[in-house]
Every structure is written in C-alpha cells, then in structure tokens.
Image (cartoon, rainbow, N blue to C red; front, side, top):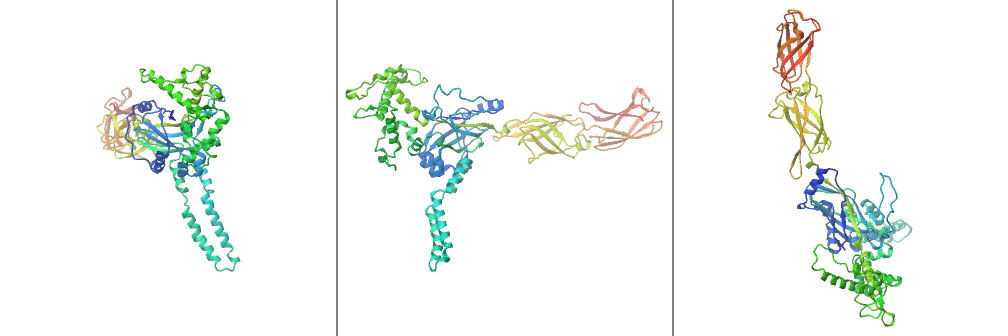
Length: 619
C-alpha cells in the first residue's frame, strides 16, 4: 500500500468561487520556480536521488497536487544538520498549483498514524474517547502529529549549533589561546609570546578552514523552505515545503534507531525476510553485529514469541523469520490462484483477497507437526499466515498518512466589485459641480482592490463621461474602499443629474470584470434670495439664484397664487448669469399683498425634463 497524502479538506465561502474552481481543471503550464523553490533545488535533488518517494491524492482540486519525499537520516543531516535530523522526520513536499486563478494557502501539515500497527489505537476500543466540548471549542486527535513550525525548528537548530563538536573544538582552541596570551607576562621565554600569537593567528583559523561551519547555509535553507503557517502558493506556480515531525512523539528509541539507520525496514518491512546476522557487514554498514538494529529486532521477535517459529524449506532450524517468509510465499501463491480464477471479472472490481477464504481459526491447523515436533511448511494458506502478512502490512510506515490542510483563495480581480455607496465631498454645493471643478469622493463596497472607476450620465443621457479624469488613490485604497478625485468636464453638472458609477478590474489572465452600476443623483438644490422691500406697483425687486448649470438660463415666468396680482403684472429680466448664479430684476406693475407666494420658473430642466420652479413668499 502507498502512503497517501490527503490535501486540503476545506473550501472558500463564496458559491461562485466554488463553481469557478470546479470549472478550472485544465492543466496549465507552470512558471519558473519561486525564489524559495530555487533555494530548495539542492534539497529536491537530494530527495530525488536518495529519498523515499510517496504518492499523493488531492481531494480538493485536480489542479493542485503534492509530491512528497521522506529524506533519510543521512540526507537530512547533511542538509539541515545533526540536531534536526536526529530529532525530526524530515519530509520534502513539492506543492504544484496549476489552477489559473486560485492560490493555495498552506495552514497545517500533520501525520495521521491511526492505521499504523504501533499507533496504540485499537479498533473497537477507542470510539467515544473524545472529551465533551462546547460549540466554540475544538480538540486534537490522538493519532495525529503536527509538523513543527519552522520558527520552532530554527530555535532548536541554533541552540544545538552552539554546542556542536566543531564549534566546541573551535571554542576550546580560542579559549586556550586567550588564556595563554594572558600568561605571557609570567614567563621569561622570548619564544612564548610569538608562539601564542602564531597559535591564535594561524592555528585557530586553520582549524576553522579544515572543519568549515555550514550552519549559516543550513539556517538560510530552513528559513526559505521550512514549513510556516499561511505559506502561499500562487496560481500557476509551485513551491517546495519541508515538514518536520518530532520522532519522539511516535517512535520509541529502538524503533527510532531503526528509522535512522535502516528506514527501508519500516517502509518495506518484507525486506526483513532477507536480513541475516551477517547482513550488516555485507552491506558495508558501520555498526557491529550486536548493534545491527535489524538483527536485534528479529531476535526480539523470536524472544517474545510474537510470531510462531517455523522451519524454512531448506533449513533445519525454526525461526520467526522463516515463518514470515513461508506466510508470504503461501499468501502470494493463494493470491495468484484467485487472480487466475477472477480473470474474467470486470476490471474495476477489487483485487481478490485470499484471506477471505479463511473462515475460522481452525484453518490455522493446516500446518502438520513433523518428526521431532518441528513444524513443517505446507502450501495451504492459514489464518496464521494471514496474521503474519497483515503484521508486515501494518508495521509499514506507508500506513501513516501525511495530511496537508489549507484553503484555496481566488484572484479577487476575477470577482466583480460591489459598490455599496458613493460619497462626494461638498456634493450639496453648486460650486462643486461647476465646469472645471475638481471633486473628491469615496466608493465603499467589497472586492474593490485594483479597480478603476468609470462614470457616465444616465439622465439626462449624455454621449460622454461628465469627468475628464478619474484617479484612484491607490495608497489609501483597500478591498472595501476606493478614494478618488475627478475633474468636471465640458459643462457643469446640474442638480438632478443621475451619475452611474462602475468599477472595472483586470485579472491576471487579462479578463475584465465590471461591477453593477451605482446610481448617484446630484442634488445641489437652488437657492433663491430677494430684497425685503414691499412689492408695490412700479417697484423693481432685485433677486439672485445660486445653483449649477445656470449659464445662459432665463426666468421664463413669474406667477402668484390665486391670480393675485393678475398674470402679466410681474416681469423678470436677467441682468447677469454664470455657471453657478443667476441675477435678475422683477418689475411689479400692480401691488402684491404681503404673504403671497410667487413662483419663478427657470429655463433649467430637471432630470425628468420638467422646469425648475422656485417659490418666494412676499414679505
């Protein structure tokens, strides 16, 4: 069985994003490695050459994949130093994100050894072990070991490096030279002081050259590619991440020694069948026969009676190693027979399992005792054989899964912006909307980052934008806020004009998204002011109107309520006009009683096409 890595059991809280992610399954060409990946080329090369490969499965998206290598002890020691290699299982993961739009944020990497033989979790006995908790609480799982974060590993590394054999020797040599220099005054020899100077100036530096310190390079590599939370893998990119799992958390000293010295014994335990007492010397290992961890492990299995000893086909002694070899041989023979019988079954059917034919423990009695009480090997598969094969299967570290947790994030430029409001500074003043004026405002909403603002007139309909330029203040902009400045274009903007604001964003793939338009109605109002003198026959009343778009405007009519005075008795003459003001004179032909409401109609039109009408009460 292969060691399976389950990737990213998570999602993104926008339905449209999930749908979009499902549609982006086509492979994309990966760009050049990121700087961290470039720094990790040495690790990748070592992993490809000496590492133990691991296959992976992604349950999130077919555009994201993870390839993993377990770095053997000697590779990890050469790359990250003795302290790190001795304390951690080092796993190199290459995360490839082929999605053209979504990025990946790595949040956690951890081991799950619940299916491992030595997990300490026994089926049927561990259910219901969770402690009751409240809705706002969560808890760890007993079969999971989280990867140490790079900051923790780095602290471990730096502390140990100060006491490494190399640095300790240099420290001793430096201390000896310093002490000798301090004692130079106590001797009359003319050669003592020059000898001390030569020792300090030549011997000590020579020791550093002979035994170089590569800890800084190892520390830099840890900083560059060691796992840290919220590590980002951009869209259409790949990166190398190194995970560190504390060995003391899930391996006892004996198993830890086997993992360091002969990791294949755990990843391919069936190879234990081919090890004998001289195997260590024959393969050039440095340990002695008594220190061979594989040999010691097999002796412990025999001593503890974990496996019932059996005689091999051509030997006279009974050993647990022979029992394992015979069980594998009988299992493979039974499997071959079942496979031949099932040759006509559909291809998607599960492979046959010979152990399903073992119906009771009595089948294990198929081994018949021979003369002398020794058990003779047979060709019949027994329940004991199935237990032995299952033992080899479950002792493998391939039963341990490496889980990588995180989320998929989307290039926000692919999500249309949403405008919630538009605020214009001094938007209620006519002078703000006069021709050539500079205005400032702020759009609020969501997904606004990187957006450009466009404005057009909806009513009254105009052929071009009322602004000659709209500039976004990128230094103050955010995902929820877009400050901007603009200049009024060819003509003033009248009160009641309906302005449509939209935000356009360009994604990495050059696609453009446009927000729904937001309607902003200019409301400056018009202010009417006139003198306080009585409206008697023959008088002339001075008046003024302030607002927007008054250049060339006229007072088309002046009427009063109830026909008093009669129509035609009031006449207004424009004396001056500009974009924001209109001055006029009302000639009164008949007395107008105090309290009479007088309506002045202007040639300026509102957004609905009706004339602007202002009312004045005669004092």
